[in-house]
Image 1: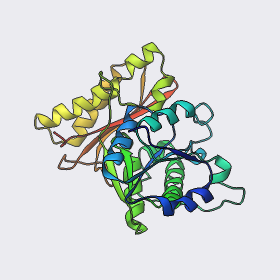
Image 2 (image 1 turned 90 degrees about the vertical axis):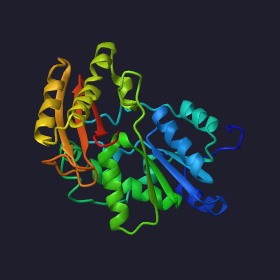
Image 3 (image 1 turned 30 degrees about the vertical axis):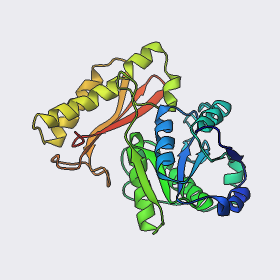
Image 4 (image 1 turned 180 degrees about the horizontal axis):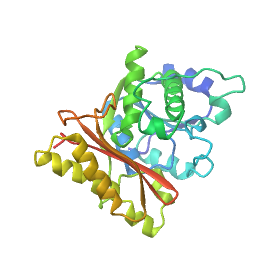
Amino acid sequence: MGDRAMDVICEIGEMKAQRANWSRPIGLVPTMGCLHDGHVALVRRAREETATVIVTIFVNPTQFGPSEDFGRYPRTLERDLELLQAEGTDVVFVPSASEMYPEEFSSWVEVEDVTSRFEGESRPRHFRGVATVCNKLFNIVGADRAYFGQKDAQQVAVIKRMIQDLNMNLDVVVIPTVREPDGLAMSSRNSYLGPSERAAATVLYRALRVARDMHGQGCCDAAVVARSMRESVAEEQLAQLDYAAVVDPLSFHELESIECPALAIVAVRIGATRLIDNMLLNDE
């Protein structure tokens, strides 16, 4: 599978020029690099379903706030390219920030409502950066399908809203969250955690399991479930809660009663590292 030639392209013009050579359907896997098994699952799904697999590696500066971790976000390009070659990726697009955002750049994509809560409230302008860069990547690649992980559920909801509202000819494929054996959702930011912090980080999964178990036992009061999630996080001394809630997975409005579908979400800071996770309560 990894024997085929893999093109690495850094310029938008070359990507557009090469599109005529790509067989359809085209699958796009947008990433910020520092790839892990969660990304591999996306690439493998794209490889199964599409004729040409394009992976983008771009640490997008516009989705980071001024006090966030853009400068120290892990960058492992050489290792990432080896991994993608082994998975049979056709093209890797690795643009610079100046290539994506030239000096005169002044256009932004704003998705309203779904971005006003939770991640959108905690990280102002984050989703403006996400929507804009995804819109650009969709246009540059001309993909038929784009692959995203369930872990970033609100991001998925924002992208689905944008695609629907702007009548884009693109399908979004969402892959279940890939977890470590102890339940921690795989994330590039896990590399920031020291040993004690890594152990504490499993509190996100424990809180989500509390929600799943309560719902499985018949509790449909979203406020009661969310309170139990918060109490679960509070038991971990190294954890500082940002939010825990039960929401509609498309609108991210908080639910009063847990119907189908429903999504438990949680964001926690462990030391200097902020982690998010979620779980569909009607998934099993």
